[in-house]
Length: 134
Length: 134
Length: 134
Length: 134
Picture (cartoon, each protein chain N blue to C red):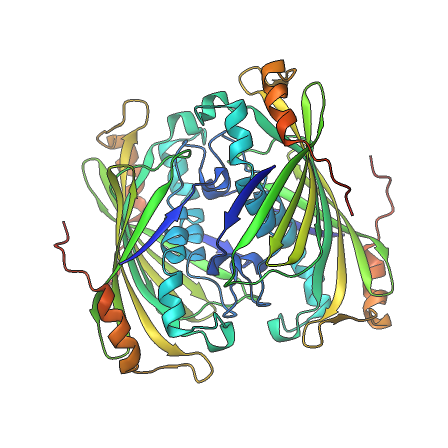
């Protein structure tokens, strides 16, 4: 599991008084920095690999400014060229967000997907989700 | 259908050179302004109604800076207290995004969902999606 | 003058109930799209030219969701390699923002500034600010 | 001095390949969370106090994805109802941003500025900038 702590920002709230829903994908992406680095150790956009294909976010509980949140990111499924993530966002003892996200290993220069190398699959296996989604 | 034209911003791109995936939920929400107004004609956050419950976004094609995009938002299903949207984002002749999003009619002051009034349901019916999702 | 109409987004507000201050630089940059195109007609990031050096923003009046804003962008001064802008944001009859921003004509590949070509200076002169800043 | 470490996000970069200029005010505001808490210990938007009046940002050096940045925020001047900040953003050994920002102690309910209480001034004095701006 990849864990990332996020400090909510005033600019991430909205007029309703809570964190705006569009902030959640931003935080989820921030929680994948360590995952991106496995595919691209130099953090180099010329060789960027991970391109998002689909993301489903469930908003279970409102999130507020003033209290840190924790993002948990697991690998749910490793495909040939693609990767499915399962992610949760917690604020205190409350699970506020669950998400399922699919990325593909994309060769940006050639604009086509490519198999995920076995050396990377071996690392990803250390982050497999073994729980039960609820 | 609600239609909204968006002019992509430099700040909405990322280092890979295209519009960042986290921009899409921001644009989709921008494409719901007319819908929000049906529930809340004064655009008043004290009486804000529409709270997001779930959103699934499929990224079919990359979107680039320099060319306007068109957001199409239909009502897919009207429930008792909830509402399902079907949305598409087009850039030129390319459909780049499809999304399904569920909102609930939420009473923020009392922190509970409430039935959607019939007067609002009558308006929403003019925006029903009658196509076939592909 | 370059004029751009912006429709405020819910995600651009904050918990205080108005447009968050960090949204303003986003809108000002959105108001420079036509200017960027003069330097880079293809909107091509490989040949991107305009790099910001300094920006001062004065927040004169709060901006709210629910009513369009108008961005006005003038050229205040054309230097050898740099350019100073004067910008205003209006909501209805209220001037809410004034800003002064300096850009440099930057060669990203060689990482150095370059003189602004005379052909571009000739176009820029059509957008000179001739008013009096107040 | 208030110090805040920020982990750059992919969504905060732009097509030019660096952190977009509009991200900087977002980070600077994030670096003021501890300051906001002095005025509003409950982080409560109903009683929000600090409203921005002016901000000047100088972009000295480009900032890149993949390496943490450090925000330093000092109090430069304490006025009757207002407050001037001096802020810097560093990435490694490079100072990338300097900024001067003025806030006012604003009573949102009554929509007018109010003197900063002496009890708060006493805390602020511990964060006074004593260096020389360069």
